[in-house]
Length: 219
Length: 219
Image (cartoon, each protein chain N blue to C red):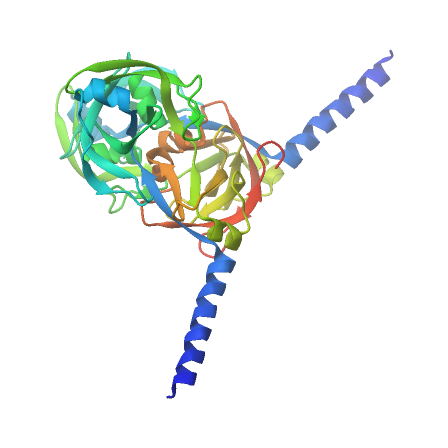
């Protein structure tokens, strides 16, 4: 086989895979367990002045990591220990839990996009060196898909779009109104929480298929 | 207004409501918490010989009731107390839990239709007068819709069909492959578990809409 033939075969194989990818619009899924993002100020109250978070493992989104540090979060009905801190520190403290956790703790947090914590639920946080009562910052994360601009172009979507993702499993589900978030810093991945993963009988590493764009109030 | 006019208006109003009902195919939703169905033999081991279950409250499906009795169910990783017994007694013991419960207890039960417990998971049950290790009977309930033959006719479905139910909420979802179960004894109602309810941010009393029929392996 000469080089030209090999190139032609390779090109055909690549085209075939791209076509499958484009017609199917597969999206890898990652399941987010409950976790805490801390402001620098709050981190130092909980872990001590001059403390720095230490990295346990990189997360799939570039620059983000699971820290070795964990905290206890509490409400009037109950508390949850060993909740993982994610780094690096952020401008505001934000705690993401499932509805199952919310019932156990006695809170009624809203479903919110990350960063939108205005008038979300309060929470008590216990660390090894101190504790905090935050007035807002406790949310249930809105399901969303991270992607870079090339993925967005390939999938025909834009930042802020809402799409439907179909998941085939023992408990098949179509997740409606999944938020598209586009950034150069993102890697293609859909994030759902443990309730959503359990309802669909899926795990990190499974995939969904983007089947249509929808709109918040009139689909 | 004479009687004829009133009758005509009433007929038009009824027709309009029926049309809405037929075009929308609304299905009331009930969320099933974890629970235990007991065989008579097992009930007597757990609560004592000659014991009879006592009714706490009727359930929506005719003849079924929540008993005052509760049990502790256990696995190698953890146990759950105060699990409600449902009556009346059945031919086989069956325990229905959520995937969240399964992870907590350390079991990997299959998603099954009620009654189909062959080769399902084992479980340990503690009662006030005795305990049991059942070899099988622990399942995660397959989402399903109870309806009587008239409902089935109106909705254009048959016993054993699989349909898609769309739920509008803060976290909208389409539940695919929802099993239709038809019997004279049934009242129209979709049953989902707590993980599914949390994933869709819905509660007992919310409704879904039957939007299409699907098939298990080739939809």
